Image 1 (cartoon, helix red, strand yellow):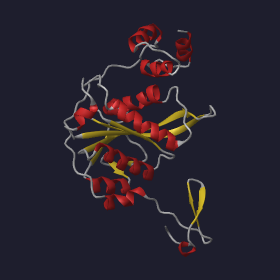
Image 2 (tube, rainbow, N blue to C red):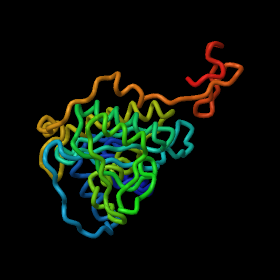
Image 3 (cartoon, rainbow, N blue to C red):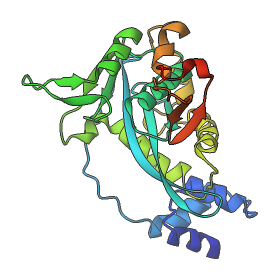
Image 4 (cartoon, one colour):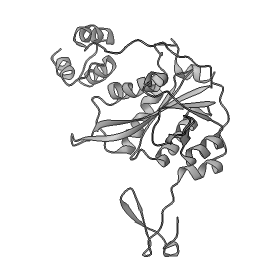
Length: 271
């Protein structure tokens, strides 16, 4: 019990996380005992009730960014962006950590998420993230980033934006982001973004095979009921995976703050 008190003092109240951490230290009991112990100590939730919004199979994916914190092997706390996509009907989710919150990282995450789910939903709901929305026009409609607009047309998905100051409109992905912070991050240490994503993929697979509290079914089972559009061929998506850089005259390109040498024939050219 003393170890549970220590973990809760660190802000860890999620019973699944506590069970995982306690099992690593020899705990052999069930989760019910942990839930009963944690319940009187858990801080009260201060969230107003909202009406739940359901969508038909294949209709909507909710997408969002979040800056999270993780602990590396040396115990240093670092900040990192995480991309999250949740399907409105099945509640299947996909997350991916990136080095940057820019349009190129976003599109790569989008492609990886759609490949993970196996198709393209009819619509994508997001908030007014600067990654894909440059501003609002006089008609109060979003001015989409041209590269994102081109991508959405290529995959056949209609982008939509939720109302200002109404985050609950895309509550499914908002809850997923909180779930990442409360369930995936606590008690773990990672070496780098690649290590984070290896564990994140395994975690998504596990969560998508568990009974969802709202639907009462496993997301992986409802995923087969989603009515997706087909993904375009890989060659049509290739241009969204890469970024253009201008090579220096001495044969180097800069990417993520690192200079890479390339064949001299490409010096001074866009690559």
